[in-house]
Amino acid sequence: MNRTGKWLLQIFVGVVLCCSTALGYGQSAARLQLANLDKLSDKAARVTDVTLDGTLLELAVKIIELDKDPEADQLKDIIRSLKGIYVKSFEFDDASQYSQADVEAVRAQLTSPRWSKIVQSIDKRNHEHDEVYILKDGGRVGGIVVLVAEAKELTVVNIVGDVPLEKVMALEEHFVPERSHGGKHKPNKERSHDDE
Amino acid sequence: MHFSEDDLRQALKRKDPGSGFTQRVMARMEQAKTEDAAAMKGKPAPSAKKSNGFFAWWQLRPAWIVAVTAVLLLGFGWAGYQYAEYRHQKQAAITAAIHEKELQEAERARDQAILALQIARSKLNHVLQQTQLPADGNDKIRRQRL
Figure 1: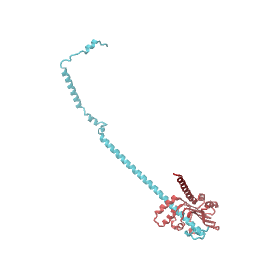
Figure 2: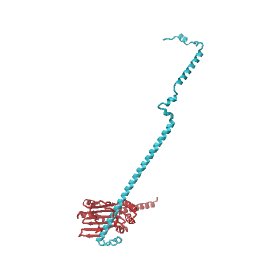
Figure 3: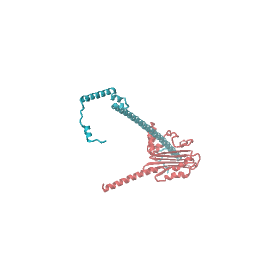
Figure 4: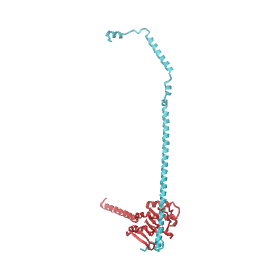
């Protein structure tokens, strides 16, 4: 191999390494570290903890493919484009069960310029602070974070991947699974913002 | 005891066997033959005696070898078949268990994914309602406020 060939090979290897590093960084940047919220489990009346990485999502797609329901295709398309879904939701019986530091620990991870806060809602009367962030990955959405901090509830939804928001928003209500399957729940009346 | 040369010479000198020596020798030979024949008649045949012995089966050893070989072959064949069947059933059970486990894991993953997406949808709707934005995902990002 002549000198030019070696030079081109070195450039090629460098580009491949840079691309793989950037890809890995993109995925790791889109996923938040939410382990600091685990301590709230003891105080919460209801805890929903969902951790689904790429492998589990692939499994989920496989089982959804077995479903003959045409509306399952919609769900399959959403999950197929995702690389991870991480949800931590805590519902408390009393107010002020979590600290501002708990929320700030999550917000601190969203200060990177790649994250953009697209929606923010502050309701001081009800002690509610809701935010939606998206991670820009070129021209696409690389991830999304929904942070809902209410007086008696703290929810962080972190979806990694090219999130098809319009499809997520259009998800049918009947897709809600049996509550016994999702996360660890303490007995409490189910409450959803959709019901409000 | 000491023998002199004369004694030895005397002892080893030729003697006349007497008349009828040849007849006597022949008569003794005939008598010996007759005694042997009589002895053989009175005793059972050697082969018959052997057949009643403990090792009589050894006389039929080619047949026994064939029979024992056949039994061994059948035994090994049957044992091999049983072992193969056992392995096959065990493998099938393991495969079924793995499949069942994977299926359960996949169902759990599907349910969790649906739950997570429902929570995401619910919270997004809630935030959009709070900000008085229409909860229409198609142009939600375009109309971002911040």
